[in-house]
Image: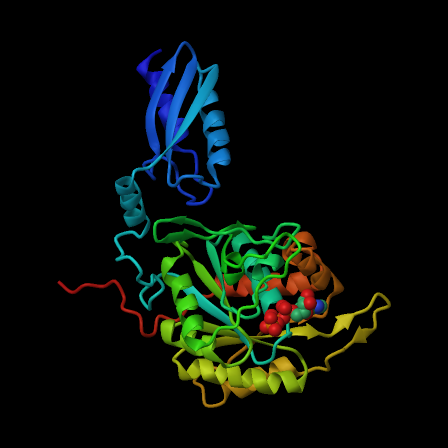
Length: 385
Ligand SMILES: Nc1ncnc2c1ncn2[C@@H]1O[C@H](COP(=O)(O)OP(=O)(O)OP(=O)(O)O)[C@@H](O)[C@H]1O
C-alpha cells in the first residue's frame, strides 16, 4: 500500500478527539505504529493509563476514522499504555508549562471566574448554577463548573451525571492530573464524584469536614483538575458565609460574584450579607438573581408564593456606597418544569427551552456572555520598548 494511504490514515486517526482530554490524539502523542497492508489498516494507540475508561470510545472512533480512508477495507486497532515518562511529558504539556499543583485561575488568567452564592439554603442556587453553566456552553463558551458546596453537593445529579443508583463517575486520573467528567458541554467536578456507597442501595457517606479539609478540597479542585482553557469557571458555593466562602475568597480574590435570593425579605436580608462578605475578600458582586419569583398560572393570574421585591432589595442594598449600581440581572419564576427537569438531571434550558424559567436563565447567560469582566487589578500583556 502506498505511503500516501498510511499518511491519510495517520492524519485521520490523529484528528480523532480524546473524549476526556478533548484534544486530538496526534497532539496528545498517542499514535504509535500505523501500517496499511492489503487494505487492512493496523493502528496502535497508546492510552494514558491502564483501564482508561475512554478506551472503548477511542477504539471505536479510531476504527471509524481509519476505515473512512480510501483504500482501507478493514481496521485493526491495538491499544497499549504510555510509559511513565511519556505520561509525564503529557501531563507537563496539559499544564501548558505551568508548574504542577499551581492554580491556573489567578488574576491574570483569561478565564472569567464567577462564584454563585446565596445567604440561605434552598433558594435554588445550585439549580440556577447548573442551568446557567449549560446555557453558557450552549452559547459556544468553554465552561467549567466546580461544585464548591462540599457538604451539600448536588451538581452531578442536576446535570444527569449520575447512574440509576445515584453514582457519579469518578474523574480519570493521569498521575496528579484529574480529568473532569463532562455533562452537556460543561466540565464538572464535585466531591460527590469521590464518595462511594456501600453496595448499590447504600447511602452516600456524609461529608462532615471542618475548615482545613474544606479548604484543601476546594484548593485541589482549582489546582489538580485539568479544565483546559476555559472561558468561564462557575463555582456553586455553599449557602452562607462559612469556611468555603472564606477559602474561595482567599484563593480567588478576583472572582466575580452572583448573589441568588428569593423574593422573600427573610432570604434577601441574609443574601446581602453573603454579598458583603464576598466583597470584603476583594471579590466584585456583578449582580443579583431573584429565583422563585412570581409565576403566571394557566388562567393568566399571577401567583407570588414568596412575595415580591427581594431581588431588587438585595441589589439596592449591595449598591450602597458603590461607584456603580449592582444590577438585578434576572428574575426566574417559580416553575414546576424547572423542579421536575432538575430532579430528572435534564437541565430545563435544554429540556424545555420555552419555559419562562428557562428563558430567564438563557437571558442571564446572554447577559454574562456579552459582558466582559473588569480588567481592574489584572496585569495587561503590554510591554514597553
Ligand atoms: N424556580 C424554581 N421553581 C421551582 N422549583 C425550584 C426553582 N428553583 C429551584 N427549585 C427547587 O428548589 C429546591 C432547592 O433548589 P437548590 O438545591 O438548587 O437550592 P440551593 O440554594 O442550591 O440549596 P442549597 O444551597 O441548600 O444546596 C430544589 O428542589 C429545586 O428543584
